[in-house]
Image (cartoon, rainbow, N blue to C red; front, side):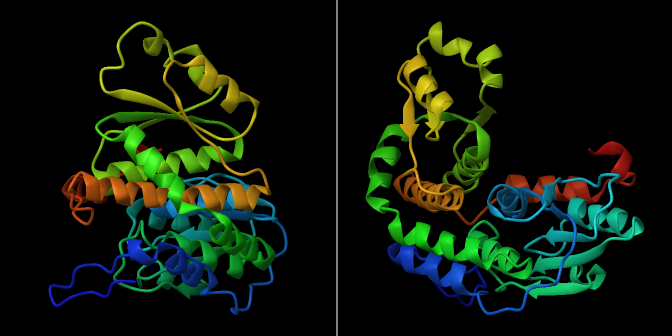
Length: 309
């Protein structure tokens, strides 16, 4: 991992040592003692942290629900994920769920969220939140007692060949990906879209299958692509059929193993693709002025629960 310099730029995952960086990050919380949890877990988070929470829904062998906003259901524990610890939406959700009697586990590098929690798992500070994904996933799986799945995630990284990234970068360079997926690979597609937006600063869009068959695939059959490229992620029937259906589609497959390995291995690979594309486009992947201004707008909402969600 590249260290912060004197101008206090955030620490970056080192793309030249990507595999070992991810293995080290996923291994970081293997030894922590899990919280004894009975019943259902409610996981919540926004942006890159929310993607980890959504990933848990698909890979954790627990009764776990995910939502970005509070819901009126009974849970024993809330797993609140916010790298900064200051995310407005997550803070609001935690406060509302605590009113329903939930205990809170906070996975964070900051302090504000931790003050609301019964259990805090501290993340390494001063990272780009999106680069912290494997640390957050490791901490979250370990604290809820899913170390078998965490070991599977480490195996997935060891098995995944990063050489596949070159063809993906070449295929999407200079284009705006329209990404389609279904089932548990939806979380991979969402993550890829976010990483292309934030790292490479390119337009990218996501739609679920088969919902997309009712509307947004239609333009691909009527126009020149106008800079858009359809990208299909997954191994199932819908993925294969859609890749053949849409002209010029790029099909990104995962090796069929376990759900954990397919999801984590794909995120690991496609995160790397987004970083390589950022380099090729000569983009500063640290700076996010639009997102920063958007967060300021959200934090200024006076009646948050009425205006959002």
